[in-house]
Amino acid sequence: MYDNPDGVMIGLEVHVQLNKLKTKVFCGCTTDYHNDPPNSHVCPVCLGLPGALPKINKKAVEAAIKVGLALNCKIEEHTQFYRKNYYYPDLPKGFQITQYDFPISSGGHIMIEGEDGEHRVGITRAHMEEDPGRLVHEGTIDKSKYTLIDYNRSGMALLEVVSDPDMRSPKEARRYLDKLRNILEYLDVFDGNLEGALRVDANISIMGGQRAEIKNISSHKGAERALLYEIVRQKNVLRRGGIVVLETRHFDEAREITMSMRSKEEAHDYRYFPEPDLVPLKISGWAPAIKETLPELPDARRLRFVEQYGITDDHAKALTSELKLAIFYENVAKKADPKTAAVWICDVLKGELNYRNLTIDSFKKEHMLSVIGLLASKKITEDGAVDIIRTLLDKGGSPDEIVAEKGLLKVEGDIVSTAAEEAIKENPQAVADFKAGKEKALNSLVGAVMKKTKGRADARAAREVLLGKLG
Amino acid sequence: MIAKKDLEHMGWLARLELSEEDKEKYTPKLNSVLDYFGELDEVDTEGVEPTYHILPMNNVFREDEVNVPAKPLTQEEALSNAPKKQDGFFKAPRMM
Image (cartoon, rainbow over all chains, first blue to last red; front, side, top):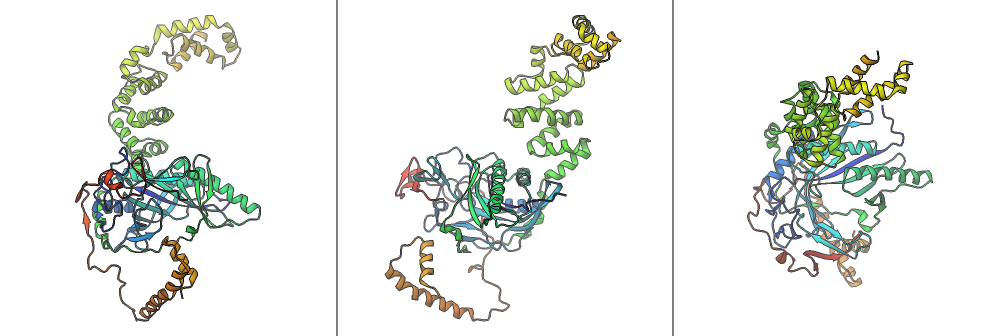
């Protein structure tokens, strides 16, 4: 049991861009704007020009239902849109089209790895809305003289996924974000690598105080840092006998602090009213058919990997935490020993990729298969296999070429025997130590053999040969 | 009852600058609108389904097709009415 000593309660509002759609949510402008000049994919609808009429993208509604179902939500019988009124330059119309009391889905949950094992996080609702434009400030937001606005992003389909305040630490919040992103990628509605694909607002309170809402969090790591800072800040306020007030705070990613955004807007007087230009949706009837099309989700795939391939739960968890990695593993496991494949992909390849800030896209399935093949036929050592993987990532080529170029073929028999004899002759002190009962002295002899064979001997075999000769 | 300070708040929300004269003039006008809603409130609506939308329609969609029904504006067209622009962006005063 995790006893949560400070009574931390965290709820997250995650804005997810449905960026795998071809067009925006209420107009036919393309979603493929990321490398284009500002304001080059805009029309009267997403610029909010007078008289323009929004019309909803059917695929966006289907994607929203898909996500709702994957988050174990109920798809509502009646859903409709509202105008949320406020003035900010990112909103060209002076209001945002969003949902209010009739969200498309609500009442779900997902499981995360919590402080004390499996932990359930409730999903209050996941509602549809339009993305505002992108604001650019010269210098920092508090120093800049002007705001520059690009409306290419304006009108992108967003889902706001609101969680219950069920997370009890910044670590759990990060795990929740990882899990949510993982599910969204499995559903193929979202590409998390695109700029602005997932944005987070966090609500956090500790025992004895009111909650703060933290805005401007743009990464999972940022969420964890902002929340850690906020817990310390709130505890300090309470320790000094102060009051933690209900407020909105801005996360400064560079300085890793949150700052109060005191303004009259605090009152949140949004004056929601039904959007007269969009008729209500009655689409709960679509849910059963869409449910049929849902892919295998991470938790299900993890269980199947353990059962089907006999790998450990830790390996299965690591492999399914990224859709591309899971697919890569499964392609390798079909043609090689699944357990060996899990070890080399999880314990070696993944680490080497992370170290270089690369993704699994940078490594070919065929190369993994040949490395495993070379190991299985005992042609290379484990050190040699690691060397091949590193060289493939750094310089490219093929495993066979690297083996030939670096002379990685394992040496055995006479060569190891000769190297062992030389090692014994050249290290009389280690031999004496070993004979006097210091078992560790053998390690330096094994090391000497490895050095003589340029790492191409199998360390275990070298050890046995040495023991034979010393015994 | 709408008081003068409510009117000032509404004016601020709508980014309207109201003179003292405006405030004197509009406070009673808005109150008469509010009174009328008070009258409507007295109607017995027990068992009547709320009206969410005035059109007797649901489920109007468009397909996910790029540039249908219309092509986007060019950057130049998009910015043609902007009072201030810079490097293809709309330019506005900084807001916090």
